Image (cartoon, rainbow, N blue to C red; front, top):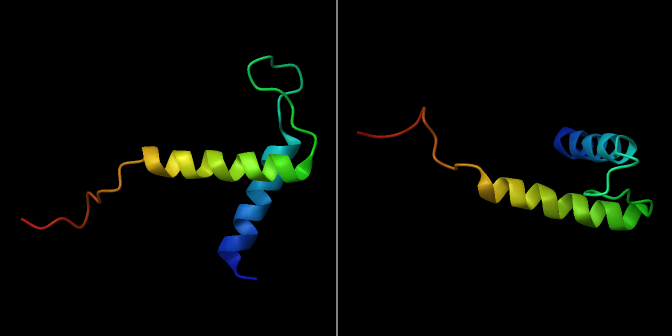
Length: 60
């Protein structure tokens, strides 16, 4: 397993363990497979929202 994959698995486990317990807007997901599915969707959505243009490598 490479370091990138271990980092993302660790972040997912950390997010799973730090879910809000009593938040009506974001209910707790107990099933790990469902949490992993929702976590990947949220990660993909955050990637689409980010600006993909690089400010350090643009040509003039």
